[in-house]
Image (cartoon, rainbow over all chains, first blue to last red):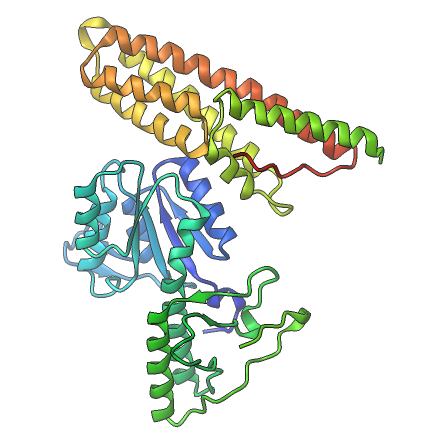
Length: 231
Length: 157
């Protein structure tokens, strides 16, 4: 795998049969500094992910996986779609051993409590009422961070490179500012506010990397462009 | 750059935009759309509303066909059309269009063909009206830019 900047950008697959809504969600996600792929149906979503289960092949149990340049970190899908609903898509993803860990967010223009709880019970991370706004996407930041850190960790272990870990503050400090690596520096995006539960993930990472003999006590890198943040 | 002209145009733009909200053509969601536009995507709002108007035209035509013959109205198809129209109008902040869709859905639910036809006519009127209004708004934007000014970000309460 190359160390392209795009690799570290959070990649979202957005599914919606409405062209207007696809354009909107694409822009919202771009504005939130995500890489976006949009498709207009659940089938196309599964195809993109490389998960084809006998929809077109002769063998009904065949699971073909196509190599992807960039992996998908989150799937956001409309609920009401012809053919395969967002709920159907959610189910298929959660049934897949390969894709069940990708967080899924459902969007709907209708506020139906039974629908919402059904989706959450099936494993959806969030349920957004349309029209989705920038403020809603901020709720996705913890998911992004969790995946990013996990991928980062995996990459480091594979390559044997040392971790540049943020310093963990005391427990009174509810927020952690995690600065991106030099390679993923974007002109406008710098800060990501991480909720308290992420502290635990980081602590685990720190502990794990300590166990593996990697150094974790590093000062944060000074970013170019004079973007300074006190930690 | 003639700052007096720019200021005048900006004020005209602001007043016009505010009037569209006050008259109920637009709601908060339009404000959200404008927030998503920046120097890198200066045509975002115009593009999205253009797609919306295309949508309106297509859906109105197909619903009109479905409602065409009194003895064989496909209410399911009409309902689907209304649902889509309501969704996209809501997504762009087209308040009046959205509100007609709410009434439209009610007529559809009780299979009231006459009511549906009235709503169809109304939704057609509303989207075309909004289209004209927004064309005027975008024209003002262009004039500001051509005069060397910037388009004001306006907070609508």
